[in-house]
Image (cartoon, rainbow, N blue to C red):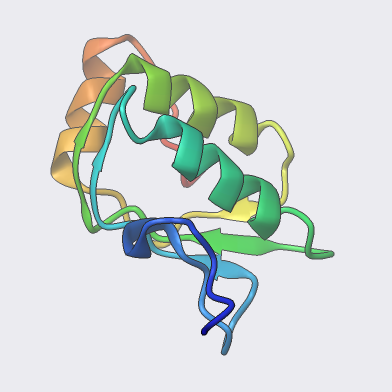
Length: 100
């Protein structure tokens, strides 16, 4: 029996780099709870953390709310943002990118 996390593979933090998370697929109201758990685990690390959002295919306002709350920690570097996420942010009136 293994002791793997119950989080879906799309939101697992790598053992090689516990300060980096690269979610894949959708982050909507249906996945946001698992994504929040992954972000909470990510932010348990000291210092700057990395969140690569280039593999995110679809987001909704629940996910955006969570991402903007995480940004307020001022410890998050976002090396990549999917086109869908960037479009949604602009549609909602967010001029600043998550990566700024």
